[in-house]
Length: 94
Image 1 (cartoon, helix red, strand yellow):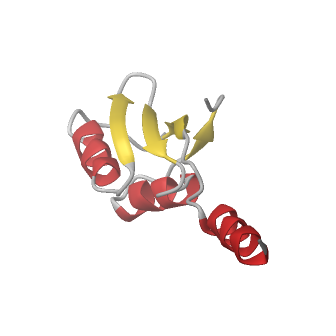
Image 2 (cartoon, rainbow, N blue to C red; image 1 turned 135 degrees about the horizontal axis):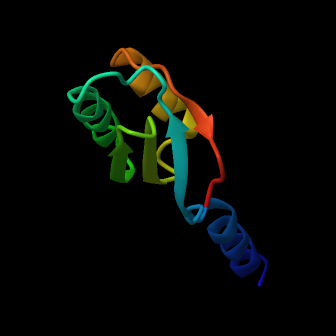
């Protein structure tokens, strides 16, 4: 019985954390030409765990849906910065 409980406890403790899909909006104020959104979108879609990216040039925003067990907002903002377009979290997250 103790072995069974030990196995069950190990199973619970080592079970994968269930990931949640999360959507955030990033403010990318330095997008100033029609090619900028393409570069920002390409940088974000390369990140493992990102499932969808929509970039709005007129509003200077990027909406990103991602698996929060595979990436984070910090990784997303670092990717835009590394592509030449620093960003910050804007608005609500889902």
